[in-house]
Image (cartoon, rainbow, N blue to C red; front, top):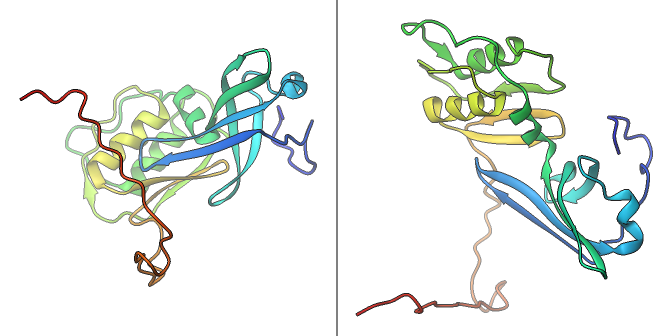
Length: 193
């Protein structure tokens, strides 16, 4: 898809050979996808994939496409990382100003050089001095996390900085009960004695 209209299944429903989701707290969220060559006309640079991710359907932007003669392979990052392409217009506040995390996020989103299609918020408490410079919106949000703490959470075109993520479901993983097995791999190839 190339628009924000998700009222249909888009250009094509993809039945991938492989689709692996990787999500790292405050670092990256992407899918690696392999599909039959017949899907190549629909898997284009910067198009969107709507993927059934661990936290529901989510949009990912296609990057790094390769074709090996039998399949199309690609990596697609969550659209939240599009915030790397939007920039703040001015340095943030004065050196002696203190702000809450939410105030800092609002300042960033309202002082971009161009308008952004994202909403944002934060439930992190406390005040601090955020040393924002002219940077990308994502860079400013990461500086916010360094100042106040928290976790960057994307949900479609909404970005939040949350105090906590996940939930305690009162389940303990125990071998022989709900853990079927474990695989441990050791790499001693670079050990020198």
